[in-house]
Image (tube, rainbow, N blue to C red; front, side, top):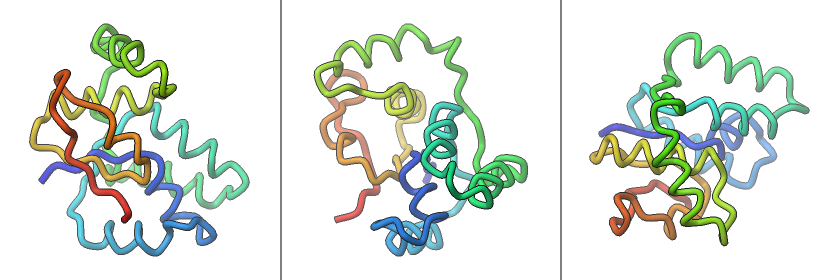
Length: 136
């Protein structure tokens, strides 16, 4: 199974005060990496962790050791990402979320590991639900 990683689990794993900390740690322990992600997700995660410098360093270490693999080129996928953001502009779809949805279109067997319930609203390839791993 291919896992596409959102910012929420990154933050939850590295911040013991996050309400999803235990859930995210348990899920990550059961999943096999590497975890695919994009620069927008890392930007979002490091912004949310900015008050935890050691956590930000751990994010970058996981990119360096390829636990988190950057596998998306926005310049090549700009048109479909822009279309997704326009389609969901009433929800305020972030660039990171649009990139992750597009990644599922490029890798149909993938599952998004997230804490964001908006992935239950988004659709891949116009109408297909997205496989997600979300907290209850």
